[in-house]
Length: 187
Image (cartoon, rainbow, N blue to C red; front, side, top):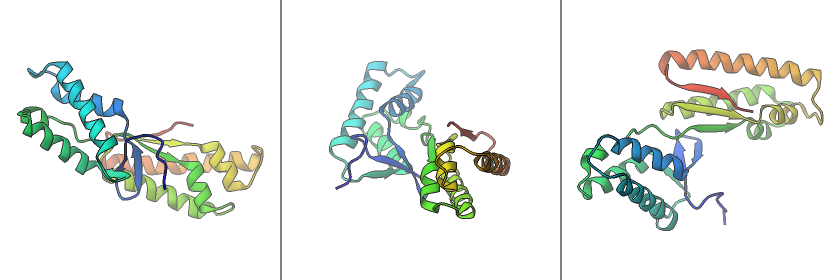
């Protein structure tokens, strides 16, 4: 049995990115859709808790496609007579977080080319589904793992520079297709 870090299922963004479904993100998405309408804030909060309850207690899968999630929410809102809110939902998926350490583990020590290919594939897969933000985590630990180094070294610093350049190239390439996307190195 797989133990999820949350009661809620993951949200699948693209073909290979899974993002935690966070209650705060759900609530914010629904409140933005209802902003400026005649629906009181407390009702929107109640609907948000209802969606969370469904996902935690009645949804059978461990992940849900982002489009499926938005379709289910819109259908529920429409059945409650809130089609005007359903029409205003921003269907932008939550921020995608990519672990560089995990990609390095998958590539294996010394396989930098495979690591760079996995990184490119992960970013492009995430971008296809339209998130506004992609975060890269674990750069130092990923580089150390990839280099097979226990401590940070000059070789690690060199690879870090190459990785930063590669990420900048991908960011430039993607920005022509999706200028609103933010590709960020968090840690």
